[in-house]
Image (cartoon, rainbow, N blue to C red; front, top):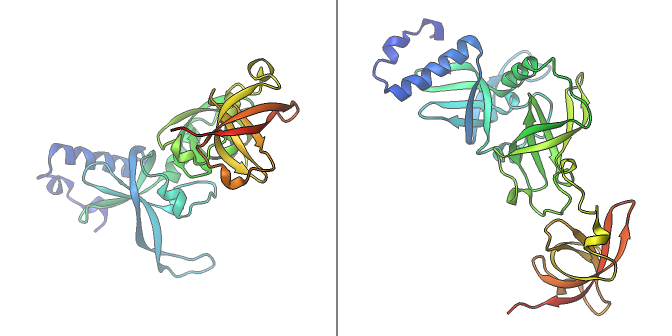
Amino acid sequence: MDFNELDLTKLDKNLTEAERDEWQAIYASYRGRSLISGEVAGVDLHKFDLVPEGKKKAVPTTVRCLIIIKYRVKVIIPETEVFIEKLDTGYHILHSMCGADIDYVITHIDRAEGFAIASRKLALEQIRRANSRRQYKEGQIVDAKVISVGRGVCTVTFNGYDVMIPQREIGYSAVPDLREVIHPGDERKAVITEFNKDEGVMKLSVKRTMPHPFDGIETRHPLGCTRIAKIVGKYGGGVFCRLYDGVTDVLCSYETMQYDGDFKIGDSAEIVINKYNTEKKLVYGKILRKIIRR
């Protein structure tokens, strides 16, 4: 039966107040295309009758879907309705959205089965239209909300634009796994580094809102000084050591009698600062000894 033919008064008669409020918000979104927000609870597989590209007949297709359950009603958002621009909408990015609070618009209601289908894409389009008169320019600082986090990339949303920010643009210090320091729902200030309204492309950088740790390095850590540092990563022929100010990373080599296997991530070491690269804003050093803590 078509939704408009349903006797909602009869269907909602025995609902609790909380259940009735939940359904009323869903009805309003469906009728007026108003926005609802909710937290992503998980990802399910659902079958839909879809028409493949270049075909005329719909075929049953299994689709990954975001699931939102605010109270009792299951809201399903197919992966094709999650983003406007084509992002990597595979298994990992959808699952990494769990816990994120997102906006969506209800597009279908199955009152008998107690679920609704929604589109985040329609919500993003509305948000963009509402902010269409805003002027975005490179160097502008904006407030972005994190909606997904992977090991080496996080996705934020800002005024209807979803932007994937690679690890190198999150901070100046090496972070082996972004999921340890950023979570869905976090808010971050970011700098617009590129914007193309016609193509719907925006690029952001979080680290450019921060002072560069290299600035003033000669005063804090002069050449020849020794420092205690923590090994946070490895590269061919050496390791990345982070000084205990928490932000300065030093590319360190080690003695010929030492081996890569001698050093593990998390180990502490005494290092000497022996070189600056002012152009690339890099600090180089050498491991003097590994510190054994007992």
